Length: 325
Image (cartoon, rainbow, N blue to C red; front, side):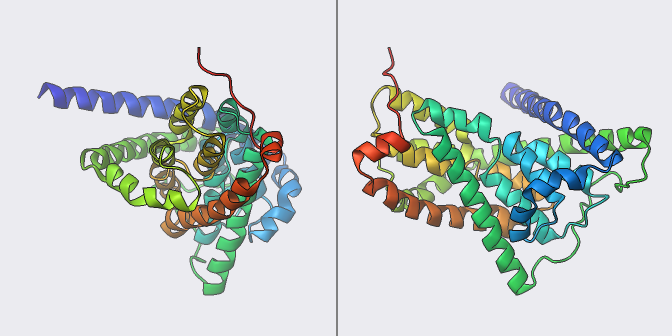
């Protein structure tokens, strides 16, 4: 009984902690976007990425969502997307493409600093995530368009309000608070689901099933366990372990590069897609398609990395890290 109570208390603590992180990111972004909408500047800020958004079949205003996702976090991007619902008619395909790209390429300044500490070039790792993300968005849009799939308007049935451009600031504040309150319970449900997966050893099973695919990407047996931790749990977990192993000289330089590259484009494989699916993304793009595309992309990248001469590899991709004291 005591163990059950302790587990429940930990679940509440983890939920509140994650919710607080989301609040610190989303609330400022939501206020800024509201101001941009008030002054009619949303389209202006989306113009810079309009050509890229057009390649993915997305409206120019969605460029603001992508820009925030690239520079801040996935939560910031979600906040922008929710704020734009009154002025942009997103289809399910649009949201799936947009959020799937952000799953691959998000928070580049913060997350790629982790990779840089392990020796991986910041320019290479950030460029890889951006190029793979945009390429996936283009391919995913072509597939959905060709099959005329998911073209119906996106609706979030759990939203406690119907967004409207005519809202006063007071009405907007109330609806935003209602949204954030609803999101807290989504977080609780998500953490409970992940805990059940852990207790049922499903994450261990997934790790065992997916491990052979790492061989296709040139990742050695020594780097496989850490890579799978990053893929399933997140870059901060796997990246931290990679930094430790690199400092202790337990992994080869090319293992570090390939492992961190795959973690970069495909981390948080379970948790992150579930969050995006709660906000309208379809599982076919956010989960299955993303994983398949990233494996194929890394199969090509690994061939290039493994064939690079040592001097070019050290010049453009990797800087040896200092050994641990």
